[in-house]
Image (cartoon, rainbow, N blue to C red):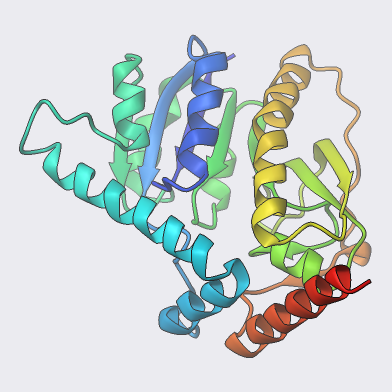
Length: 269
């Protein structure tokens, strides 16, 4: 099976997730593509500053600072590795090159020149973890299809920052879905779905950690199903779907209040 990975440069979770896939299937991976954009990418009608402050309330101060330090350290290493050869490239591109995997750095995976370059690679599966909306021309290239990891139990909670919305809505169950990518947001058939119960001790950070602990195993399982070609996929019906956007600052503050109240109730129960 020939696998192409399209991803973003995210040192918090995504890079580790992609590294685990590379480690498990490196003989099948024919390329890793790094695209423009990261977890702070927002649409033009959204405020990036407001989103950052929202994340502060959602994560909590200590986790927000911890993640900020990780990102800052990553950016410093990324800059200095170009100057000093003894500093290892911290990006997923550096990891791919170390394993002899072909790499691209592009603005958009929908770029026509890039599409022309990969059309003759006989790709079976594309794994997408970029922030880009993939268009029909790219989706038509892989023989089997393009797949994505989504941090929720589709068809519920399509869209962004799903661990937040699971807790904000008080849902009792969540998990990870590996699904086919279509032109419609998070709407493709589900190949693998792993679920678990949301407990009173769970917060945003714990849900994220639990999801990523499942994610690489789920996508490896999905690749095995696709390779055998005998998968019975789960439906992902639009009529049962719920959609989430980036939370507003007001919603983030409400969420933090809910988490504090829940914590106090737990202490004084």
